[in-house]
Image (cartoon, rainbow, N blue to C red; front, side, top):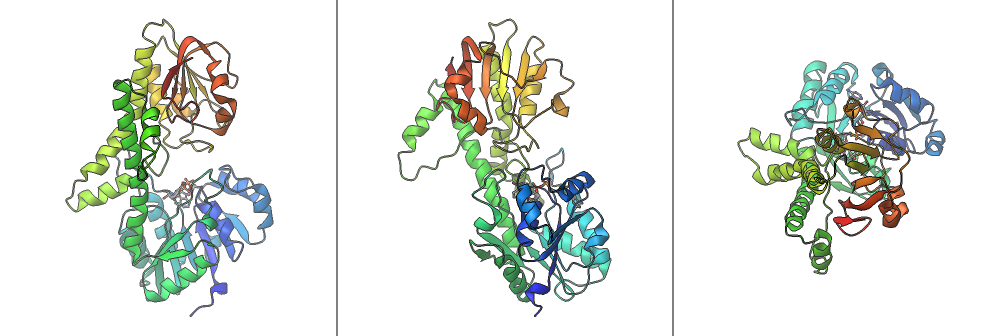
Length: 424
Ligand SMILES: NC(=O)c1ccc[n+]([C@@H]2O[C@H](COP(=O)([O-])OP(=O)(O)OC[C@H]3O[C@@H](n4cnc5c(N)ncnc54)[C@H](O)[C@@H]3O)[C@@H](O)[C@H]2O)c1
């Protein structure tokens, strides 16, 4: 068996997942980080991480072991390739595997006998072996489990969360045969302190990852639906939850605008694979439907609440897809702003500590403004949608001061007031 220390690792795709992983491995191995985004590589070469996941101090500390490149040839000498490329969905909510396919085609040209290819991106069961592995096999003339080996190890990091970092969470690992399982296990063991779970096989590990996020999506959808029901009944959702939570087995989740690249995307990977085998997954898709409806629901509440005001001013606190991260992928605030801006008499003011210019998708709207300073006694509606910690520090009392007399505040996650809607 190959000595673990002789492995040279390439991490392909240096985003929210890839960079922390490359950083962790570089404490034990020589690592090359490859990304197609030249500007990202140039920033990393200056030890700047635009995602705020890895501090400059850390990047400087491991600079001898972690090199960055946008030239695929530079990873030729590696023999342990880890893919952390994006797996988004198309406009029709179908898996978009083009990054995985692109890497597979390039890897086939450089891979040598005895190498390992591990996928960390979220996919549906079958992608690692039937797409990634097969493309490499076909184009390189090397055979899986004879000349090279496959593995799948799903990523569980939670951007912005400094506690559940890669080293501190249990990691699921799987491989294409027993020999590769041992090697992959031992390599990951070097960096994971919380233990490794060996899944039965690659398909099982792929399925486990996709259901982790699907379960979360469904739990949030349930809460969103309850919020809509109770609000119509004029019962405050958060008062209900406070009471229900006193039961030992009640599971607490927050309602919310499910955006980003995981929770709102991964269920579609599973439903796609499910439909391919003739099963129409009704529960999963209805959760998606509810979560996709939430921006429209909030917009309808604003319309109702401001119907008697001639030129309402709406303040939106938070734009990124979740709190305390600069990540704006698939943020549902775009949908909300677009819906609200259809009312030409509305003025929509967007504020977010992570956003420094009006997002592209909104820049053509004449009645949406990005503001850095918040005026007191100015807004008719305050939508507190993304609970960044600066807003929590500000507190409800100060946030209410931005509202005019009798304006109202929506606290979607109940994080600042413990109430869904209230008057200022
Ligand atoms: N971010 C999370 O919270 C999280 C958590 C768990 C799993 N995941 C999964 O991990 C994967 C990566 O997610 P992410 O958030 O790090 O994405 P990301 O967009 O932050 O990073 C992906 C990186 O890959 C690069 N890239 C794209 N195509 C490439 C190609 N063909 N070759 C090389 N590099 C390429 C991009 O330039 C980018 O820097 C996805 O499958 C995602 O679902 C993400």
